[in-house]
Image (tube, rainbow, N blue to C red):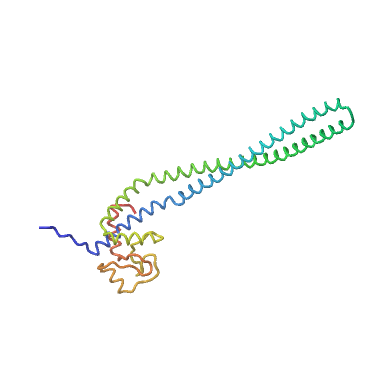
Length: 259
């Protein structure tokens, strides 16, 4: 004779949901111990990347200005060669007109030298300033990299300390989730996702759902205590269970997880 499917009571569904909530809340707690560390690590990596790009830009500008200095030095050397050449030619001129023409060329090359030297001084001053800024940047990058290394080690240590428990709880979460029908589980997960505290199933405190200031009417409280149907709080959207069930399941789950 075929075996009949056992109908799971509403009470068993509520217990399964609350047990799953206990496990998931413990997982949230473990992950929260990492605090802002993952964000700090990410922020440091972004800051270092930005500073490194800035340092690269300074290096590129310094190289370009050094290239300009080399170009100006070439102009100076060429101008000096021309001056020597023109002075030699002046010794062999036949008239004043040729001499004056060469003198003008010498004066022009002198101006070229002066202008190039002025530009070299300007570039050198800019390079000195950029090198100073670049050194500060590199020191800052080195400091942040050391800080990042420390923060990464701190995060890795925190993760390694709780990884075994987290893996165990994830396994238990999946195990307990299988006890709940798909539609109810989907509702639980949706409520949990939309809750800032990650709570989807809550008990009552002084007649109000945990975390809420809206006291439920006595009739509604009685319905929750009867465990005959799934009741959703109209204000918070959370699934509600009675205090006795909360205490019973908390006690039971102590043997499974630490919380």
